[in-house]
Amino acid sequence: MTKEQRKEAFIKFCLEKFGDQFDYFKVDYQSNRKPVEIICKDHGSFFCLTQHFVRSKYGCRQCAIEALRKNTAPKVSKVSKVSKVPKEPKQKKEKIKKASTSSKKEPTPIAELVSNPESYNNFINYIKSVYDGQIIENDKELAAPYTIAIHIPDKKIAFEFDSLSGHCERNGFTKRYHLTETNKCEEKGVRLIHVFEDEWELKPQIVKARIRHLLGITSGKIYARKCKVRELTYQQVKPFILKYHIQGTYASSINLGLFYKNRMVAVMTFNKSRFNKKYDYELIRYCTVANFTVIGGASKLFEYFRRNNAGSVITYADRRWSQGQLYRQIGFKEIYDADPNYFYFKDNSLQRKSRVQFQKHKLPRLLNYFDLKLSEYENMSANGWDRIWDVGNKVFIAE
Image (cartoon, rainbow, N blue to C red):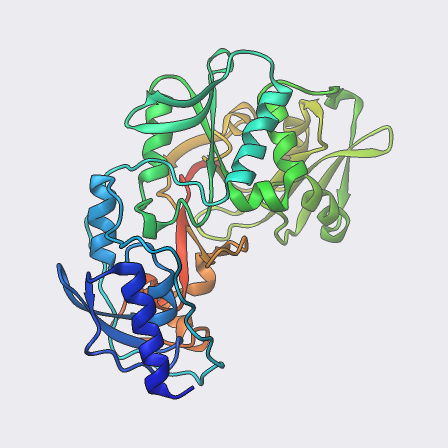
């Protein structure tokens, strides 16, 4: 197929999907991996990759923002069948000459978006299967104007299922969206738990165990006074952390295991402080065996660490899952709430990536297209990535 034929197929596809909302007379179609110039009749000219344009719901970023603010449907003409755009072979890397700019104003809260209804329903049904008390689904009053997926009044706890492609920045879920939901719930004395879609799909046993623990559903209790502390290597604790900690493992130099009848039931790990060099150590991970409450486990492990290591300690509680009460109980002091953090993902992938991997200075060697004039997010967006925001961390120290 010639370039002109590919261009005609692309334009035909777009006309069928978006109607007459866009003009394409400036399109110089090379491949679906190269940017083209498109003109929105409401917002003017912008550049984007053709593969992203045909997949997008609104086409124009400004149209998307305005529609989300008004909670209206996109300007799309109804057709019974849309022709396929021909696939293109991989092209050599080439820099983007221009790209669209994003609005700095954050859209107002919009209705929840669920990109994977089956996964969402499985999540809701699991909570209903393990808890037989009062459950309020799609609670519109708890954190109005936000809708909360599950609210359990008797436990003063609520759950949100945050799908990656549904709760991404492209759909209006910007930096403080999830944080505002959380704060509104906490103002009413309700703890809101945010479960990311990839956690539910890729680590279901860990998520289910955390949910049961939060609801007070356990198989029994293990008392730390009957346990012994052992110093271990990172390789010895790594499998335990991978099995029981929602964030997975991270390299650590001091690794303590708590053993009950020769079985490891809890792990606490430390390393030099990663982000704030003012403090000597960082408590990296603490986790326990599933389905049991290890009473006094964290306290016993931390006391052992303090007896054998002099210096200050910093640690972080992920507000999606924790309010940091355990750290307060073992002697930490809360010093501030850190801003929300974000993660990148691509298309419908469940592989959520740390933003640290995609700092702007690293992007030229990571992306097919890079423009120094664009921001980190604009470059990532032009290459098919989007991001999802969390709720931030609570920061604790022990002097």
